[in-house]
Amino acid sequence: MIEIPGAILVSGNLVHDIVVRPASEIRFGGTIWVDRIEQHMGGNGASTSYAAALLGAPVRLIGMIGDDDFGLQIRTRLASAGVDVSLLATNVEHGTASSVVIVREDGARAFLHKPGVSSVAFAPPFSITQASAAGCSHYHLANPYSLPHVRPIAGRLLREAKELGLTTSLDTAWDSRGEWMQVLEPCLAHLDLLFVNEEEARLLTGADDPESAARHFLNAGAGSVVIKLGARGAVVFGKDRLDVPAHVVDAADTTGAGDCFAGALLAGLYHGYPPRRAMQLANAAGALSVSRVGATSGLLPLAETLDWAASSSPTPCR
Ligand code: ADP
Image 1 (tube, rainbow, N blue to C red):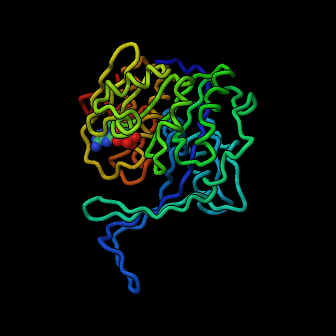
Image 2 (image 1 turned 90 degrees about the horizontal axis):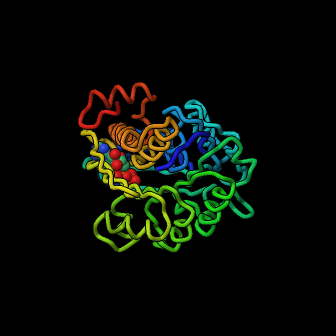
């Protein structure tokens, strides 16, 4: 994989989630009583940075929030984990991106989403500069599909980071516009590490098995490919293949598991862990993420995550 001796620069979206559960149907003209209405921090950039910082890596996040309470809550939570939020811009015209997530008894979810600042964030002439990357040795681009202005420039941002001497990674997510490879292809030549889940890998490449999909990404220039397999763990393809099983947990909410996994893997590499141990840390963070409602609510600091992983076989981290 890669070594990350300095701080991690992350760019991506930040979302304020309101989670309502359980509700089986929405009727207009009446009140539906529910058990819980909770606020959570979401968004791929926010969750990935939070996870990496909570697990002990120095992290700087580039992103945008609105000049509102939702934005303030996100900024405060990120700072509480130690994320450097000095490059978190506040936009006074558009609100913080936010979602209302309605969860049915059986776990199915309906999202009402307001992109807010996500529709204007990273507008031209945004670039990765020496100043924004000062002290950083790695750049992680979280979900280019969630930010309209990032779609056409994702490859350029990664190239700029490489030109500044940084290593790079990118985590995909669902592409609601269906552009898939049109956005990812220009990135692959500038990527040391690609994170992708099994279903996204299939849609991006047309290959049905993870190994063939990974081969496609590697042939197009990616250095290593991590394919996330949900409750089955994850597998890395690069020089060698490395399969690492997941922890067994009761999944309360799988939203954000991939972001926590990616942030934890980067934190592990920052701590100098060899690939298998970094992957075990990532699987532990992914499992802790799904064990609670809210992307990052279940996460624990490094020492506690290692203790939890050690007591929860099959994948102790030490
Ligand atoms: P994404 O959130 O990007 O779709 P996954 O659903 O594969 O990615 O989840 C990322 C990681 O979180 C997995 O590789 C695994 O380590 C962990 N994870 C996800 N779901 C579960 C689960 N049900 N039980 C245990 N670990 C899980």
